[in-house]
Every structure is written in C-alpha cells, then in structure tokens.
Length: 329
Image 1 (cartoon, rainbow, N blue to C red):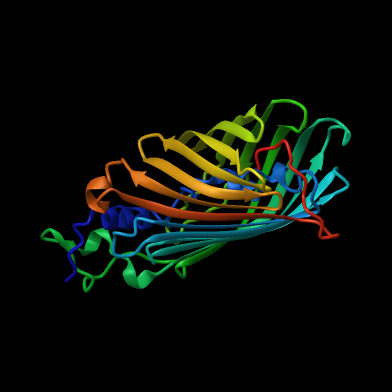
Image 2 (spheres, rainbow, N blue to C red; image 1 turned 180 degrees about the horizontal axis):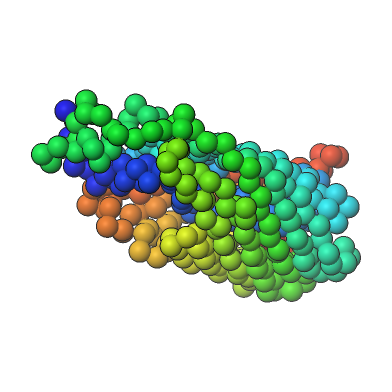
C-alpha cells in the first residue's frame, strides 16, 4: 500500500484520471527561447547569420522527483527577409508524464529590410509526443481508507499510455531596430496548438489540447552609454489557466570590454518571484535565474522553486564578431 497524501501527487493522479495534461511547460527566461516564444521571431535578428539557443529548467527539486524542462533551437536569417529554424523541447513531470515536441518554423519579414524595424509573421509545423509512465499511476478506484493502494484494480482502459499528435502554431512579431534611438519597443502575439489535437491517453475519454494564446512586449531603453533597461511583460492563456509575468532586465557594460553584466527581476503572478544574473557578449549571452515559490505549494516545497539556465549564441559564416544591436535579444 502506498501513501499518496502529497498534494502534488494527488494533482497528478487527478490529471491523468481525466486523460489529459492540458498546460504547456513555461520558462521564467521566456525571451531567451525566441523560437518557442513566437514562430514569427524565427531568423529575425541583426548582424548574424544563425542563432542557437539552449534552455534548462529544474523545478521543485525538494520533492521526490523534479519537473525538468530542456530545449534547443537553431535558426538562420536569410537576406533579412526570411527565417527558418528547428526546435525541440522536452518536459518531464516528476517521471510520470513526459512531453516531447519537435518541429520546423519559418518566418517572413513583411516590412522593408532597409527599415529600422521588422514586422514578421511566422508558422510552426511539428509534432507533440506524450508518454505516461503507467507504473506510477494511481486512480480513484485505488483510493482506500485514506491511502492509495496500487494493488487494487484501476478500472481504467489506457490507450498504450502514449499519444503522438500533429501540432501547428502561428504568430506575428514587431521589433524596432533603430540603433540611434534610445527607446526600441517590441511586441509579439502567437497562437499554439491551433488544431487542438486530442491528447487523451484513455480510450473512453476525449480531451482536446487547448489553444495557448501568448502576448508579450516591452522596450529596450538606453539610459546612458553602455547601460540599458528592458521592462517587459508576458500574458498567456490556455484553457482556464493564465500566466502573467512582468519584470525588468538591465544590461551594464563592463568598461574596456565587449561584455555586459545582466541583472533582472520579475514576478509571475501568484506563483514566483524570479531573480536572474548573466553575462552578455556581442555573440553570446549566458543567464541564470532562480524562482522563489510564493504559491500555495510553498508549504510543500519549502519555498524552493526552480533553477533555470539559458545560452544564446549568434554566429556568422565569416566568423566575425557580431556588432552591438539595438534589440533586447
């Protein structure tokens, strides 16, 4: 007999009981994963030929098993007009559910390539593979006298414990890129899972993956030579779940070098306070952040939140150094 009084385990059991896990993984450093933030950002950057990004997030490490998110993307910029890329992400929920996403993305800059801004549209085509570790599942029928007993029959008919789904997402993005302006705003809107595929692992239940709407924006502000502030905010809606994240990122140039120190803080409403530090170079940026849990789960996680690390690298075919740009990312 297994004791399953942990609120997190109870929530996971109820989610699988409905046949679905409808909420996507999220990153605190969402702007450090542009290809998965908005398809229209694919290949939309200055003074580089290609970009590589990598993200790792480990959440709730004080629990028996952490939630781990990893991601990688590669995209190219073609004549300041087109962008093409490949992305993949993996989200593991405490060893019970694993979600893997893989796809291709493309974007088109509808504005004049010589203008000091870009207005782009983008599309992603890919697949989502969800697999449940059925050995760790506990069901309503197994609840007995305050405990879950895994030896009792579940009464559920599983559909192989896995699901492969096609996935389509689309977006539009605007960025000001005027090097002589002190204020360069940006804004994005995207829709993910527009075909709402059935993600249920139960043969008797149909559960559509809800469309995720994402809106984010901000501005990169040069307050002094070598010092930039970037206030920004993100709003996401997926089914009944909402996410609001607002914060400030600062860059301070290190005198005599081409490096900048990055310091930031943000608040994800009713969830976490996020602090981050990093180092930015013309060709690369490295950032580390930590979430302090302030949600109702803080009593069970001892206020431990999430560690997150990101790398962005911009490369050129000639190997030259990338010049300083006016955009935040």
